[in-house]
Length: 72
Length: 430
Ligand code: SF4
Ligand code: SF4
Image (cartoon, rainbow over all chains, first blue to last red):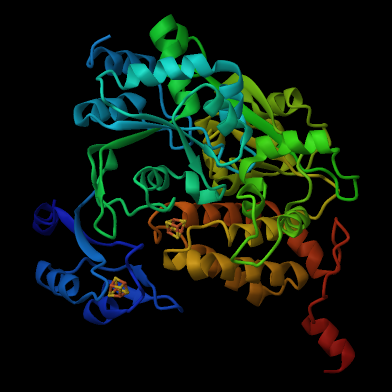
Protein backbone atom coordinates (compact mmCIF):
# COMPACT_ATOMS: atom_id res chain seq x y z
CA UNK A 1 0.00 0.00 0.00
CA UNK A 2 1.42 3.40 -0.91
CA UNK A 3 2.48 5.51 2.05
CA UNK A 4 0.05 8.31 1.18
CA UNK A 5 -2.94 5.96 1.52
CA UNK A 6 -1.87 4.84 4.96
CA UNK A 7 -1.57 8.41 6.13
CA UNK A 8 -4.85 9.60 4.60
CA UNK A 9 -7.37 8.37 7.15
CA UNK A 10 -9.81 11.14 6.42
CA UNK A 11 -11.31 12.82 3.41
CA UNK A 12 -12.82 16.19 2.71
CA UNK A 13 -16.61 16.05 2.42
CA UNK A 14 -19.33 18.56 1.70
CA UNK A 15 -22.39 19.05 3.84
CA UNK A 16 -24.80 19.35 0.92
CA UNK A 17 -27.55 20.80 3.08
CA UNK A 18 -25.34 23.62 4.30
CA UNK A 19 -23.61 24.25 0.95
CA UNK A 20 -24.98 27.35 -0.74
CA UNK A 21 -23.07 26.97 -3.98
CA UNK A 22 -20.63 29.81 -3.43
CA UNK A 23 -17.93 27.95 -5.30
CA UNK A 24 -15.06 29.11 -3.10
CA UNK A 25 -14.01 25.47 -2.75
CA UNK A 26 -13.63 25.12 -6.52
CA UNK A 27 -11.25 28.05 -6.71
CA UNK A 28 -9.23 26.89 -3.71
CA UNK A 29 -9.17 23.21 -4.70
CA UNK A 30 -9.35 23.24 -8.51
CA UNK A 31 -7.88 19.71 -8.74
CA UNK A 32 -10.58 18.19 -6.56
CA UNK A 33 -13.67 20.37 -7.02
CA UNK A 34 -15.46 21.65 -10.10
CA UNK A 35 -18.89 23.26 -10.25
CA UNK A 36 -22.02 22.24 -12.08
CA UNK A 37 -23.91 24.76 -14.20
CA UNK A 38 -25.69 26.09 -11.11
CA UNK A 39 -22.52 26.50 -9.07
CA UNK A 40 -22.82 23.40 -6.89
CA UNK A 41 -19.65 21.38 -6.32
CA UNK A 42 -18.73 18.10 -7.99
CA UNK A 43 -15.96 16.11 -6.31
CA UNK A 44 -13.53 14.33 -8.62
CA UNK A 45 -9.79 14.01 -8.95
CA UNK A 46 -7.02 13.67 -6.37
CA UNK A 47 -7.68 14.34 -2.70
CA UNK A 48 -6.27 17.63 -1.44
CA UNK A 49 -3.38 17.87 0.99
CA UNK A 50 -4.23 18.47 4.64
CA UNK A 51 -3.05 22.04 4.30
CA UNK A 52 -5.20 22.82 1.25
CA UNK A 53 -8.18 21.02 2.77
CA UNK A 54 -7.88 22.99 6.00
CA UNK A 55 -7.70 26.24 4.09
CA UNK A 56 -10.87 25.41 2.10
CA UNK A 57 -12.69 24.46 5.31
CA UNK A 58 -11.76 27.84 6.79
CA UNK A 59 -12.85 29.81 3.73
CA UNK A 60 -16.12 28.06 2.82
CA UNK A 61 -18.69 30.80 3.58
CA UNK A 62 -21.35 28.23 4.49
CA UNK A 63 -19.01 26.19 6.73
CA UNK A 64 -20.08 23.22 4.64
CA UNK A 65 -16.72 21.50 4.29
CA UNK A 66 -15.53 18.97 6.85
CA UNK A 67 -13.20 16.04 7.36
CA UNK A 68 -14.71 12.60 7.65
CA UNK A 69 -13.02 9.25 8.20
CA UNK A 70 -12.48 7.48 4.87
CA UNK A 71 -14.96 4.64 4.49
CA UNK A 72 -13.68 1.06 4.73
CA UNK B 1 -34.24 -11.25 26.97
CA UNK B 2 -31.08 -9.32 27.91
CA UNK B 3 -29.53 -6.49 25.91
CA UNK B 4 -26.95 -8.82 24.39
CA UNK B 5 -29.08 -11.81 23.46
CA UNK B 6 -31.43 -10.09 21.03
CA UNK B 7 -28.68 -8.93 18.63
CA UNK B 8 -27.09 -12.41 18.76
CA UNK B 9 -30.44 -14.02 17.96
CA UNK B 10 -31.11 -11.62 15.07
CA UNK B 11 -27.61 -12.17 13.73
CA UNK B 12 -28.11 -15.93 13.63
CA UNK B 13 -31.47 -15.39 11.93
CA UNK B 14 -29.82 -13.06 9.39
CA UNK B 15 -32.49 -10.36 9.67
CA UNK B 16 -31.86 -7.28 7.51
CA UNK B 17 -33.86 -4.07 7.30
CA UNK B 18 -37.03 -4.39 5.23
CA UNK B 19 -37.24 -0.72 4.33
CA UNK B 20 -34.93 -1.08 1.34
CA UNK B 21 -31.34 -0.60 2.51
CA UNK B 22 -31.08 -4.20 3.82
CA UNK B 23 -28.66 -3.22 6.59
CA UNK B 24 -27.99 -5.88 9.23
CA UNK B 25 -30.62 -5.28 11.90
CA UNK B 26 -28.56 -6.73 14.76
CA UNK B 27 -25.79 -4.17 14.18
CA UNK B 28 -28.27 -1.31 14.31
CA UNK B 29 -30.01 -2.64 17.41
CA UNK B 30 -26.73 -3.27 19.24
CA UNK B 31 -25.62 0.31 18.53
CA UNK B 32 -29.01 1.66 19.58
CA UNK B 33 -28.95 -0.30 22.82
CA UNK B 34 -25.42 0.89 23.56
CA UNK B 35 -26.44 4.52 23.04
CA UNK B 36 -29.83 4.15 24.73
CA UNK B 37 -31.39 5.44 21.52
CA UNK B 38 -35.06 6.30 21.09
CA UNK B 39 -36.89 4.27 18.45
CA UNK B 40 -38.91 5.43 15.46
CA UNK B 41 -40.88 2.70 13.70
CA UNK B 42 -41.28 3.78 10.08
CA UNK B 43 -44.76 3.03 8.72
CA UNK B 44 -44.82 5.60 5.92
CA UNK B 45 -44.84 3.28 2.88
CA UNK B 46 -42.65 5.95 1.35
CA UNK B 47 -41.74 4.30 -1.95
CA UNK B 48 -43.84 4.65 -5.09
CA UNK B 49 -46.45 1.87 -4.96
CA UNK B 50 -45.53 0.61 -1.47
CA UNK B 51 -48.32 -0.62 0.78
CA UNK B 52 -46.79 -3.17 3.12
CA UNK B 53 -46.36 -0.92 6.16
CA UNK B 54 -50.11 -0.28 6.12
CA UNK B 55 -50.70 -4.01 5.76
CA UNK B 56 -48.50 -4.77 8.77
CA UNK B 57 -50.45 -2.28 10.90
CA UNK B 58 -53.77 -3.74 9.79
CA UNK B 59 -52.80 -7.36 10.40
CA UNK B 60 -49.95 -7.49 12.91
CA UNK B 61 -49.92 -4.35 15.04
CA UNK B 62 -49.67 -6.16 18.43
CA UNK B 63 -46.56 -7.98 17.20
CA UNK B 64 -45.04 -4.71 15.97
CA UNK B 65 -45.60 -3.21 19.42
CA UNK B 66 -44.06 -6.30 21.05
CA UNK B 67 -41.07 -6.10 18.68
CA UNK B 68 -40.59 -2.41 19.45
CA UNK B 69 -40.45 -3.07 23.17
CA UNK B 70 -37.93 -5.88 22.63
CA UNK B 71 -35.72 -3.49 20.66
CA UNK B 72 -35.89 -0.83 23.37
CA UNK B 73 -35.32 -3.17 26.27
CA UNK B 74 -34.18 -0.49 28.68
CA UNK B 75 -36.80 1.75 30.19
CA UNK B 76 -37.03 5.42 29.40
CA UNK B 77 -36.49 5.03 25.67
CA UNK B 78 -39.25 6.64 23.67
CA UNK B 79 -40.99 4.68 20.92
CA UNK B 80 -42.71 6.59 18.15
CA UNK B 81 -44.66 5.33 15.16
CA UNK B 82 -44.17 7.40 12.01
CA UNK B 83 -46.99 7.52 9.46
CA UNK B 84 -48.15 9.97 6.82
CA UNK B 85 -50.39 12.65 8.26
CA UNK B 86 -54.06 11.91 7.65
CA UNK B 87 -53.40 8.36 6.43
CA UNK B 88 -55.44 5.35 7.53
CA UNK B 89 -52.24 3.97 9.06
CA UNK B 90 -51.89 7.08 11.25
CA UNK B 91 -55.48 6.76 12.48
CA UNK B 92 -55.06 3.05 13.27
CA UNK B 93 -51.93 3.79 15.28
CA UNK B 94 -53.63 6.63 17.14
CA UNK B 95 -56.67 4.45 17.85
CA UNK B 96 -54.34 1.88 19.39
CA UNK B 97 -53.09 4.59 21.76
CA UNK B 98 -49.60 4.71 20.28
CA UNK B 99 -47.29 7.72 20.08
CA UNK B 100 -47.72 8.79 16.44
CA UNK B 101 -45.17 10.92 14.60
CA UNK B 102 -47.19 12.53 11.81
CA UNK B 103 -45.11 12.89 8.66
CA UNK B 104 -45.90 15.16 5.69
CA UNK B 105 -46.75 12.98 2.69
CA UNK B 106 -43.77 13.87 0.57
CA UNK B 107 -41.37 11.28 -0.85
CA UNK B 108 -38.22 12.22 1.09
CA UNK B 109 -40.06 12.99 4.34
CA UNK B 110 -39.88 9.35 5.32
CA UNK B 111 -36.14 9.05 4.70
CA UNK B 112 -34.50 7.88 7.92
CA UNK B 113 -32.77 11.10 8.94
CA UNK B 114 -35.79 13.18 7.85
CA UNK B 115 -37.85 11.28 10.42
CA UNK B 116 -35.17 11.86 13.06
CA UNK B 117 -35.16 15.58 12.24
CA UNK B 118 -38.96 15.72 12.45
CA UNK B 119 -38.92 13.86 15.77
CA UNK B 120 -36.68 16.63 17.12
CA UNK B 121 -39.19 19.30 16.19
CA UNK B 122 -37.43 20.34 12.98
CA UNK B 123 -38.56 19.96 9.37
CA UNK B 124 -38.99 16.47 7.90
CA UNK B 125 -35.89 16.87 5.74
CA UNK B 126 -32.93 14.52 5.44
CA UNK B 127 -29.88 15.57 7.42
CA UNK B 128 -26.24 15.40 6.38
CA UNK B 129 -24.82 12.30 7.99
CA UNK B 130 -21.81 13.92 9.63
CA UNK B 131 -22.60 11.65 12.55
CA UNK B 132 -24.36 8.33 12.93
CA UNK B 133 -27.57 9.51 14.52
CA UNK B 134 -28.03 6.21 16.31
CA UNK B 135 -25.42 7.61 18.71
CA UNK B 136 -26.63 11.20 18.46
CA UNK B 137 -25.01 14.20 16.81
CA UNK B 138 -25.82 17.54 15.24
CA UNK B 139 -27.68 18.66 12.15
CA UNK B 140 -26.27 21.17 9.64
CA UNK B 141 -27.68 24.07 11.65
CA UNK B 142 -25.93 22.84 14.80
CA UNK B 143 -29.02 21.54 16.62
CA UNK B 144 -28.40 18.63 18.99
CA UNK B 145 -29.84 15.35 17.78
CA UNK B 146 -30.44 12.77 20.49
CA UNK B 147 -29.53 9.11 19.80
CA UNK B 148 -32.33 7.76 17.62
CA UNK B 149 -32.74 4.59 15.62
CA UNK B 150 -35.24 4.13 12.79
CA UNK B 151 -36.56 0.69 11.89
CA UNK B 152 -39.08 -0.24 9.25
CA UNK B 153 -42.42 -1.67 10.47
CA UNK B 154 -41.91 -5.03 8.80
CA UNK B 155 -38.44 -5.28 10.35
CA UNK B 156 -39.86 -4.73 13.84
CA UNK B 157 -42.59 -7.29 13.19
CA UNK B 158 -39.90 -9.81 12.10
CA UNK B 159 -37.96 -9.13 15.33
CA UNK B 160 -41.01 -10.21 17.33
CA UNK B 161 -41.50 -13.27 15.12
CA UNK B 162 -37.88 -14.35 15.50
CA UNK B 163 -38.00 -13.89 19.28
CA UNK B 164 -41.12 -16.04 19.30
CA UNK B 165 -40.33 -18.74 16.73
CA UNK B 166 -36.54 -18.80 16.59
CA UNK B 167 -33.82 -18.29 14.00
CA UNK B 168 -34.16 -21.73 12.30
CA UNK B 169 -37.83 -21.01 11.59
CA UNK B 170 -36.84 -17.68 10.03
CA UNK B 171 -34.07 -19.25 7.96
CA UNK B 172 -36.46 -21.87 6.60
CA UNK B 173 -37.69 -19.11 4.26
CA UNK B 174 -35.78 -17.41 1.47
CA UNK B 175 -32.20 -18.01 0.39
CA UNK B 176 -29.02 -18.35 2.44
CA UNK B 177 -28.02 -14.82 1.41
CA UNK B 178 -31.47 -13.31 1.94
CA UNK B 179 -33.25 -15.40 4.55
CA UNK B 180 -36.68 -14.97 6.05
CA UNK B 181 -40.26 -14.35 5.03
CA UNK B 182 -40.89 -11.06 3.24
CA UNK B 183 -43.72 -8.83 2.13
CA UNK B 184 -44.04 -7.42 -1.35
CA UNK B 185 -46.48 -4.82 -2.75
CA UNK B 186 -47.70 -5.48 -6.29
CA UNK B 187 -49.58 -2.89 -8.36
CA UNK B 188 -50.17 -1.85 -11.95
CA UNK B 189 -50.93 1.28 -13.92
CA UNK B 190 -54.51 1.39 -15.06
CA UNK B 191 -54.97 1.81 -18.78
CA UNK B 192 -55.58 5.43 -19.66
CA UNK B 193 -59.14 6.22 -20.66
CA UNK B 194 -60.64 3.90 -18.07
CA UNK B 195 -63.32 5.46 -15.90
CA UNK B 196 -62.08 6.82 -12.58
CA UNK B 197 -62.27 4.52 -9.60
CA UNK B 198 -65.42 4.68 -7.45
CA UNK B 199 -65.03 6.79 -4.33
CA UNK B 200 -64.74 3.82 -1.97
CA UNK B 201 -61.96 2.31 -4.02
CA UNK B 202 -60.33 5.73 -4.23
CA UNK B 203 -60.23 5.95 -0.45
CA UNK B 204 -58.55 2.58 -0.36
CA UNK B 205 -56.16 3.72 -3.02
CA UNK B 206 -55.33 6.86 -1.06
CA UNK B 207 -54.63 4.85 2.01
CA UNK B 208 -52.35 2.50 0.16
CA UNK B 209 -50.59 4.86 -2.13
CA UNK B 210 -49.46 7.22 0.59
CA UNK B 211 -47.54 9.93 -1.18
CA UNK B 212 -49.42 9.44 -4.45
CA UNK B 213 -52.03 11.59 -2.81
CA UNK B 214 -51.10 15.20 -3.42
CA UNK B 215 -49.36 16.74 -0.50
CA UNK B 216 -51.81 19.63 -0.37
CA UNK B 217 -54.76 17.31 -0.11
CA UNK B 218 -53.14 15.35 2.70
CA UNK B 219 -52.42 18.49 4.61
CA UNK B 220 -56.06 19.45 4.16
CA UNK B 221 -55.38 22.81 2.61
CA UNK B 222 -54.16 24.71 -0.37
CA UNK B 223 -50.75 23.89 -1.67
CA UNK B 224 -48.98 27.11 -0.89
CA UNK B 225 -46.07 26.54 -3.21
CA UNK B 226 -48.31 26.20 -6.21
CA UNK B 227 -51.31 28.14 -4.95
CA UNK B 228 -53.40 25.14 -5.78
CA UNK B 229 -56.59 23.72 -4.30
CA UNK B 230 -56.60 20.07 -3.25
CA UNK B 231 -58.96 19.21 -6.10
CA UNK B 232 -56.72 20.71 -8.74
CA UNK B 233 -53.69 19.11 -7.11
CA UNK B 234 -55.53 15.81 -7.41
CA UNK B 235 -56.26 16.48 -11.07
CA UNK B 236 -52.61 17.27 -11.69
CA UNK B 237 -51.58 14.13 -9.90
CA UNK B 238 -53.91 11.98 -11.95
CA UNK B 239 -52.76 13.64 -15.12
CA UNK B 240 -49.20 12.94 -14.08
CA UNK B 241 -49.34 9.41 -12.86
CA UNK B 242 -52.50 7.94 -14.30
CA UNK B 243 -54.64 5.80 -12.12
CA UNK B 244 -52.92 3.22 -10.04
CA UNK B 245 -54.71 0.11 -8.95
CA UNK B 246 -54.47 -0.47 -5.22
CA UNK B 247 -51.31 -2.40 -4.46
CA UNK B 248 -51.85 -5.94 -3.27
CA UNK B 249 -49.56 -7.06 -0.45
CA UNK B 250 -48.24 -10.63 -0.63
CA UNK B 251 -46.31 -12.75 1.81
CA UNK B 252 -43.35 -14.32 0.05
CA UNK B 253 -39.60 -14.96 0.26
CA UNK B 254 -36.43 -14.26 -1.72
CA UNK B 255 -35.70 -16.54 -4.67
CA UNK B 256 -39.20 -16.89 -6.12
CA UNK B 257 -39.78 -15.96 -9.77
CA UNK B 258 -40.88 -12.36 -10.34
CA UNK B 259 -43.54 -13.79 -12.69
CA UNK B 260 -45.07 -15.73 -9.79
CA UNK B 261 -45.39 -12.55 -7.72
CA UNK B 262 -47.00 -10.79 -10.68
CA UNK B 263 -49.46 -13.64 -11.12
CA UNK B 264 -50.32 -13.73 -7.42
CA UNK B 265 -50.71 -9.96 -7.53
CA UNK B 266 -53.37 -10.30 -10.23
CA UNK B 267 -51.27 -8.77 -13.03
CA UNK B 268 -52.43 -10.01 -16.46
CA UNK B 269 -49.82 -11.90 -18.52
CA UNK B 270 -49.69 -9.25 -21.23
CA UNK B 271 -48.19 -6.64 -18.87
CA UNK B 272 -45.74 -4.00 -20.03
CA UNK B 273 -42.35 -3.27 -18.47
CA UNK B 274 -41.97 -3.89 -14.73
CA UNK B 275 -40.70 -1.23 -12.33
CA UNK B 276 -39.10 -2.73 -9.23
CA UNK B 277 -38.72 -0.58 -6.12
CA UNK B 278 -40.25 2.61 -7.39
CA UNK B 279 -38.39 5.86 -7.83
CA UNK B 280 -35.31 4.37 -6.15
CA UNK B 281 -35.44 1.25 -8.29
CA UNK B 282 -35.15 0.07 -11.89
CA UNK B 283 -37.15 -1.23 -14.85
CA UNK B 284 -37.10 -4.69 -16.40
CA UNK B 285 -38.58 -5.40 -19.81
CA UNK B 286 -41.62 -7.68 -19.72
CA UNK B 287 -39.42 -10.48 -21.12
CA UNK B 288 -36.70 -9.94 -18.53
CA UNK B 289 -39.32 -9.98 -15.78
CA UNK B 290 -40.65 -13.32 -17.02
CA UNK B 291 -37.22 -14.90 -16.53
CA UNK B 292 -35.99 -13.10 -13.39
CA UNK B 293 -35.79 -14.41 -9.86
CA UNK B 294 -36.78 -12.07 -7.04
CA UNK B 295 -33.50 -11.91 -5.12
CA UNK B 296 -30.34 -9.82 -5.02
CA UNK B 297 -28.43 -12.19 -7.30
CA UNK B 298 -31.25 -12.30 -9.83
CA UNK B 299 -31.82 -8.55 -9.97
CA UNK B 300 -28.41 -6.94 -9.53
CA UNK B 301 -27.75 -7.09 -13.29
CA UNK B 302 -30.76 -4.80 -13.76
CA UNK B 303 -29.48 -2.33 -11.19
CA UNK B 304 -31.79 -3.21 -8.32
CA UNK B 305 -32.55 -5.93 -5.80
CA UNK B 306 -35.28 -6.89 -3.37
CA UNK B 307 -35.15 -3.34 -1.98
CA UNK B 308 -38.33 -2.20 -0.23
CA UNK B 309 -40.30 -4.95 -2.00
CA UNK B 310 -42.32 -2.99 -4.54
CA UNK B 311 -43.38 -4.33 -7.94
CA UNK B 312 -45.29 -2.20 -10.43
CA UNK B 313 -46.46 -3.32 -13.87
CA UNK B 314 -46.84 -0.74 -16.62
CA UNK B 315 -49.86 -0.77 -18.88
CA UNK B 316 -48.74 -2.39 -22.18
CA UNK B 317 -50.94 0.01 -24.17
CA UNK B 318 -49.47 3.20 -22.73
CA UNK B 319 -46.34 5.09 -23.77
CA UNK B 320 -43.68 4.14 -21.20
CA UNK B 321 -41.56 7.18 -22.08
CA UNK B 322 -44.46 9.44 -21.22
CA UNK B 323 -45.05 7.50 -18.01
CA UNK B 324 -41.43 8.09 -16.99
CA UNK B 325 -41.79 11.75 -17.98
CA UNK B 326 -44.75 12.12 -15.62
CA UNK B 327 -42.97 10.38 -12.76
CA UNK B 328 -39.88 12.56 -13.23
CA UNK B 329 -42.01 15.72 -13.31
CA UNK B 330 -43.58 14.63 -10.04
CA UNK B 331 -40.16 13.67 -8.61
CA UNK B 332 -38.90 17.21 -9.15
CA UNK B 333 -41.29 18.40 -6.44
CA UNK B 334 -40.82 15.54 -3.99
CA UNK B 335 -37.30 16.30 -2.74
CA UNK B 336 -36.59 18.39 0.29
CA UNK B 337 -35.23 21.11 -2.01
CA UNK B 338 -32.12 21.72 0.02
CA UNK B 339 -29.21 20.29 -2.01
CA UNK B 340 -28.00 21.38 -5.46
CA UNK B 341 -28.85 18.17 -7.36
CA UNK B 342 -32.46 18.31 -6.14
CA UNK B 343 -32.94 22.06 -6.43
CA UNK B 344 -31.76 22.09 -10.04
CA UNK B 345 -30.56 18.71 -11.29
CA UNK B 346 -33.76 16.66 -10.95
CA UNK B 347 -36.06 19.36 -12.41
CA UNK B 348 -33.59 19.86 -15.29
CA UNK B 349 -33.61 16.12 -15.96
CA UNK B 350 -37.42 16.11 -15.93
CA UNK B 351 -37.50 19.00 -18.43
CA UNK B 352 -34.98 17.42 -20.76
CA UNK B 353 -36.74 14.06 -20.56
CA UNK B 354 -40.02 15.70 -21.57
CA UNK B 355 -38.27 17.33 -24.52
CA UNK B 356 -36.69 14.00 -25.44
CA UNK B 357 -40.06 12.24 -25.47
CA UNK B 358 -41.50 14.89 -27.76
CA UNK B 359 -38.48 15.09 -30.01
CA UNK B 360 -35.84 12.40 -29.52
CA UNK B 361 -32.73 13.92 -31.03
CA UNK B 362 -29.24 12.53 -30.31
CA UNK B 363 -28.36 15.88 -28.70
CA UNK B 364 -31.23 15.64 -26.21
CA UNK B 365 -30.37 12.03 -25.47
CA UNK B 366 -26.78 13.03 -24.70
CA UNK B 367 -28.05 15.87 -22.54
CA UNK B 368 -30.32 13.52 -20.57
CA UNK B 369 -27.44 11.09 -20.08
CA UNK B 370 -25.15 13.80 -18.75
CA UNK B 371 -27.84 15.06 -16.37
CA UNK B 372 -28.29 11.52 -15.05
CA UNK B 373 -24.53 11.11 -14.58
CA UNK B 374 -24.31 14.27 -12.47
CA UNK B 375 -26.95 13.30 -9.89
CA UNK B 376 -25.41 10.49 -7.81
CA UNK B 377 -23.39 11.09 -4.66
CA UNK B 378 -24.14 14.79 -4.48
CA UNK B 379 -27.03 15.04 -2.05
CA UNK B 380 -27.37 14.75 1.71
CA UNK B 381 -29.51 11.69 1.07
CA UNK B 382 -29.66 9.20 -1.75
CA UNK B 383 -32.77 10.62 -3.41
CA UNK B 384 -30.88 11.98 -6.43
CA UNK B 385 -29.00 8.68 -6.70
CA UNK B 386 -32.31 6.84 -6.80
CA UNK B 387 -33.77 9.14 -9.46
CA UNK B 388 -30.58 8.71 -11.53
CA UNK B 389 -30.84 4.90 -11.38
CA UNK B 390 -34.54 5.08 -12.29
CA UNK B 391 -33.85 7.29 -15.33
CA UNK B 392 -30.79 5.32 -16.45
CA UNK B 393 -32.73 2.06 -16.41
CA UNK B 394 -35.61 3.71 -18.28
CA UNK B 395 -33.12 4.72 -21.01
CA UNK B 396 -31.97 1.12 -21.25
CA UNK B 397 -35.36 -0.60 -21.15
CA UNK B 398 -37.22 1.87 -23.37
CA UNK B 399 -34.54 2.27 -26.01
CA UNK B 400 -36.80 0.71 -28.65
CA UNK B 401 -39.54 3.17 -27.75
CA UNK B 402 -37.08 6.03 -28.19
CA UNK B 403 -36.19 4.70 -31.63
CA UNK B 404 -39.90 4.45 -32.46
CA UNK B 405 -40.41 8.04 -31.30
CA UNK B 406 -37.58 9.12 -33.58
CA UNK B 407 -39.55 7.86 -36.53
CA UNK B 408 -42.70 9.52 -35.24
CA UNK B 409 -44.38 6.42 -33.85
CA UNK B 410 -45.53 5.97 -30.27
CA UNK B 411 -47.17 2.95 -28.63
CA UNK B 412 -49.39 5.22 -26.57
CA UNK B 413 -50.36 7.57 -29.38
CA UNK B 414 -48.35 10.51 -28.01
CA UNK B 415 -47.80 13.12 -30.71
CA UNK B 416 -44.10 13.08 -31.51
CA UNK B 417 -42.29 15.94 -33.26
CA UNK B 418 -40.38 14.20 -35.97
CA UNK B 419 -36.77 15.38 -35.72
CA UNK B 420 -35.35 16.71 -38.95
CA UNK B 421 -32.95 13.98 -40.00
CA UNK B 422 -30.21 14.62 -42.53
CA UNK B 423 -32.07 12.60 -45.22
CA UNK B 424 -35.21 14.62 -44.69
CA UNK B 425 -33.18 17.79 -44.80
CA UNK B 426 -31.68 16.63 -48.09
CA UNK B 427 -35.12 15.65 -49.33
CA UNK B 428 -36.55 19.00 -48.38
CA UNK B 429 -33.58 20.70 -49.97
CA UNK B 430 -32.49 22.53 -46.76
S1 SF4 C 1 -17.33 26.87 -0.80
FE1 SF4 C 1 -18.75 25.88 0.59
S2 SF4 C 1 -20.74 26.74 0.10
FE2 SF4 C 1 -19.37 27.22 -1.58
S3 SF4 C 1 -19.70 25.59 -3.08
FE3 SF4 C 1 -17.97 25.00 -1.82
S4 SF4 C 1 -18.87 23.81 -0.19
FE4 SF4 C 1 -20.55 24.90 -1.13
S1 SF4 D 1 -30.45 15.14 -1.71
FE1 SF4 D 1 -32.41 16.04 -2.26
S2 SF4 D 1 -33.90 14.91 -1.14
FE2 SF4 D 1 -31.92 14.47 -0.21
S3 SF4 D 1 -31.67 15.96 1.40
FE3 SF4 D 1 -30.80 16.88 -0.39
S4 SF4 D 1 -32.45 18.06 -1.34
FE4 SF4 D 1 -33.35 16.66 0.10
